[in-house]
Image 1 (cartoon, rainbow, N blue to C red):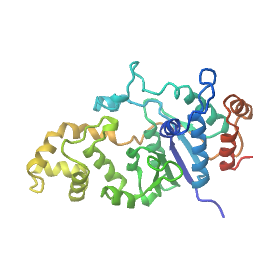
Image 2: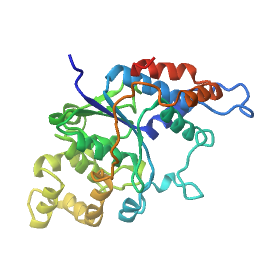
Image 3: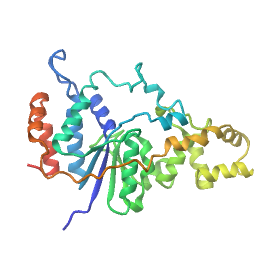
Image 4: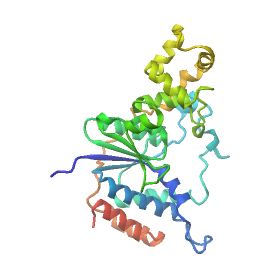
Length: 309
């Protein structure tokens, strides 16, 4: 029987940050040995994910721009708390040199990696997930709730959410999860919910005084953010008092926040083969990386999961 096609889209930074903080630094002499905990952890996570969820297609999605201009223009506070003194993303000193090695590991293994100038990995994921609708099931792997907006049972798109249980015991986020946890009916509704609620981890203020419960109730009553705003403009008596005042005060924010929260669907994607590789792409590079960074066991686990000798 032919295996059903399933595309796994990995939020790479989410995983390698988690690996960096979750995998011990085992170096005996940090002054002479390069750090490898994020590399080893990232590869082991990929092995576990591929082995357990059996994708036929795979993309490690990359932040070519972690703070795109179009989002900063809309909301200047977007991710400001993560900006280092040099204007780049604040990354731990021992993690920075590991990220290019992860890139080299993916290339040597032949696992597709994709970013796009001017876009975040989330946008690459969003574009690929929407393009796959109707063609294959999609697993989005992330520790970021923003990607819950992609959940769609009808097109078999779910999120493997690693924030709490890691890759070994993740939350499998489908529409039932969204209804139970957030009282919203769909991934699309979750995006409007996230606009109203805001997200301090991304520097998004939300509408002051509108928390998760109120946001969910408003969406249940009026359908979507456009419906809520139409009700405000028309003087609908169901929105009154302090709640009306708060939503009216947040009008300028609500004008721009959807451009920040909602994922791009039009990222330029080159014609690439996203199938899992049938062989190692660069055996010499793989051997060198294994020796230089002690990666023989992590590489073997990935290759075993992929089904490559």
